[in-house]
Amino acid sequence: MIQPPNIQPGDTIGLVCPAGSIPIEKVQNCIQTLEKWGYRVQLGKTVGSKKDCFSATDMDRTQDVQAMLDDENIKAIICARGGYGMSRIIGALNFSKFNTHPKWVVGFSDITVLHAALQKQNCKSIHGPMAAAFNKGEAGEKYIQSLRDCLEGRATHYQAASHSLNKMGQVKAPIIGGNLCMIAHLIGSKNALESTGKIIFIEDVSEYHYNIDRLMIQCKNAGFFENCKGIIVGGFTDLKDNATDFGATAYELIAEHSKDLAIPICFDFPISHGLENVAIKQGQSYLLEVNEKGVNLIEA
Image (tube, rainbow, N blue to C red; front, side, top):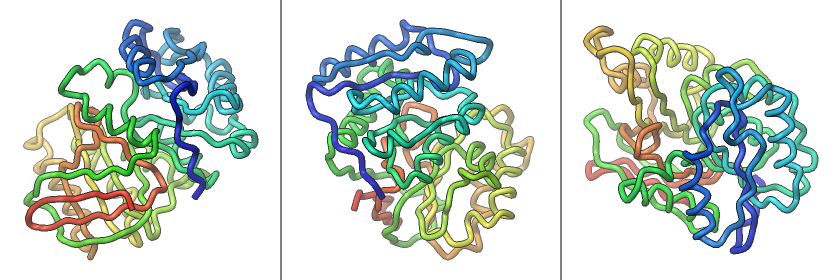
């Protein structure tokens, strides 16, 4: 796949809100940190604005994202937040200029839709921290640093503790994934993620246990897990009901739906809507090792 150039001191990073809104004051720490790292920051018109549950109208959000994709002076784009709305505009985006001058695009959650579209352009992107993550102080520093490492071209190596539901194994393959709801939402569309031969990672937030079950069933029935090489299960945070209401935890029901797969699977990996959210290069080859001692994910 095409790997965008690593960014250099003095480069300009664009901040944009292609879906939900974020108050401008919640972006200040992100701006200051990027400038401290030696970068210029260009704010999109959608940063700090609000229209209903979105940052702006569909047209305005489309134009803002398109301008950043096309601008050769912007060397990377960080989506300031997710929320909802990327799927409303993804079909209107034109990647022809972007393909001539590719750049890193960063985000997660609803931005899974944009990552999926970039996969169709054969271009890598970064599933990782957005603007709010820069407000989490010292506790969140290593996750912000993981984003910087990806942007600047340093290979990453992440570890996680062992988990009782893990399935042991080792595999080296390209990685794709993101928000489980968005992955299921894309099935049947032209931007559906292609999972064959890939390591898949999933996470989600603010769901009911029954809906996680339904999303897993949809992905399974669509063959999404059939020919993948490994599964990384990140955080399923701020769930709207108790596991006792459904009869199983989120991890238990995911394990049940993946029990027949003879591949390495790990749970509680630091990819989530919570504090723990490392940066992952979508489309990059990684070595996934799951053993009794824990989990290693090594950029290869």
